[in-house]
Length: 162
Image (tube, rainbow, N blue to C red; front, side, top):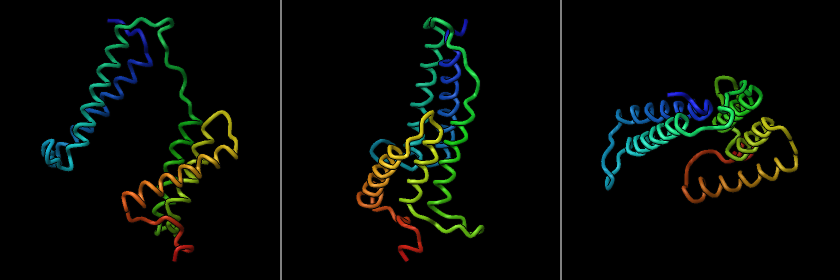
């Protein structure tokens, strides 16, 4: 069988591998059943679903004819760098690094920093649009995680909130 879409084929394999890894990792937890779910239930179901999607995408890449074979291009290093960096910045700002003397800056500052760093991955960077997006994401995250879910983690930097 010939690969008719390289992008779909390798994307499907990636989904399949990640799905199998999640499902396999979830089996080390108590899975439970639908009415009484254990901590491994959701990752197991998510892994199975992701693996099925991977199988479907891979099969489709082998069956559905594409115009140019959808070759895989070169790696997009700039977006890759900024997306990974934004996640690292978010984690460091949310929890801090006590060993390096970096205090926890809280949820709001971490989300604003995440948004600005991730926005640098794109072709255009408009400060006003990114600031509006960061504000909306910060307010939405505060409402979802602090107000509705009542999660306990710092919202503001420790030197502000005390």
